[in-house]
Length: 166
Image (tube, rainbow, N blue to C red; front, side, top):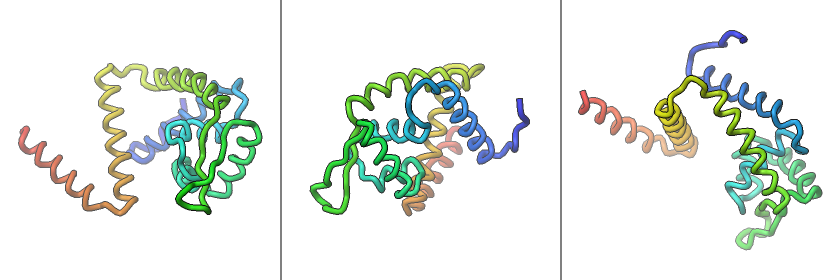
């Protein structure tokens, strides 16, 4: 086992993400898609009708890079682009039946990896971890979108709760 690169939250989250992604790639080699395509399909299944720009932000790819992936995936019958009725420059993305059929095997592999990653955690600890990570994502998403005031209000509220429980 390689040594931890650090014990700060940032290092730990980055290491966990990298190792989960690497393990997923190892266990999904028999699925006929690249890891980037799997990430795109997984996100798109949850956000049908999203714009290419919106999806690029979610999967952390440059819009032009995503566009090339979408071109190949559209040619393979995995996604379709439809004109956005509200913006003639934008296209909305949707998965096809063929893509949705690939999601279940991806979910099975992901479930196995998440179980493997959480070995030694009780069901309660797993739930706490999930809830803590959701809160971190929500806080950072709100801060990124310019709502630092909301994050600050929530932080004050949580501090108040902690003080009240002492």
